[in-house]
Image 1 (tube, one colour):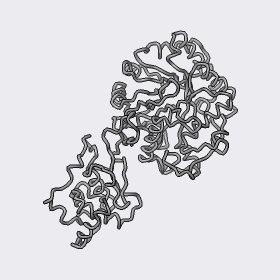
Image 2 (tube, one colour):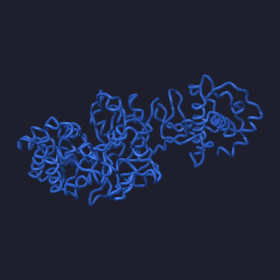
Image 3 (cartoon, one colour):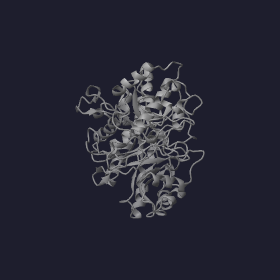
Image 4 (cartoon, rainbow, N blue to C red):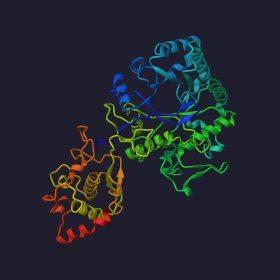
Length: 498
């Protein structure tokens, strides 16, 4: 079943000092069918994505991004780090070829020097700060240093004892690198780049971290994590990690370097050892993360100070090595098909909401089959849902079970009622989902469908003389006799299920 996502406009208005906080997106290229640069840029513009991070400085991509207004972070790949860190000429040539040749037409605003060098390429750590300084010096020579910031992304694993955040500190074995690095960021007005992955923290916690805490789902006050030293309450893993980084910097007497999260996301598919790498969880995490950033929520340590964040990532990268989840962090497939629909209805007017308004009503997991059957009886009877697609031989007959059939009927009713409040409950056995339940040739009301056009659920309410309502048992997954008493009972349930 093709499950869709629509990436939505990603410009935000929260402010850190004079800088606007934003949601951006990373663009990886480990795809067997990588779209052309012009196709990538067309997708970015169509989705109103105004901030991107590249893992290199590909000339064709930078040319395609010219005159678009999209702000671009380019990268020095790890394999080039040793050469640049040891040679002023090499650094100057890199800047001339990858920056000066493209600005101002291409709006390059930052250079990420390496990626997670301390943990991924520790032998290059001794030249990391030198590489940053030499790149910066080349920018100064071209009067570009005020426009383009220089930093390096770190894995959050360099932070030790990350909870409580107030006790966190950077791995002290890296002090000879981190201390001069942070002083460089401070003196140049740059920021700490940090990769934050609550998914991995959750997976590695052996059940200690609740899934809801990782996904930004609301927690009751007694379930919030409390820092005993500061009495600050943490409602999600993301904030705890970011604050741990702030406290780690303050431990080294650095208190005025902001943080930009250069990678964060959640995989939509995993192997058997990754049961929580699902479309629904990826949707939940990324949707809640976006709302968290653009609402200027900040963190408990710095409330109201939003942390700009790049979603990882634009495309699913099918050429990445195992596990399966590594190939499934993307918002889109290579052909531009969205993987799922971000649920942003509460994001506010500053952030354009889901223009397709694709939400669906589905049967709740674990719902009582008898309750589902009763609700299905009602929907296909007094609810006036056209359940003919559930007839044997019709597109939505399979899978032939009460969960599948009731999901179709619940959603059809929900759509024909204009998704109004209270029309997706059915005595507690239904719930709203942003995951399209369509499958195969069974296209649910409200879905884009295979041809990309939205099926209009409001057209599904049958007319008063529609004879398809006469025997709804045709649509049921089990054989039974539908009697007059059941019809009467269904009418009596009208108030219950509305």
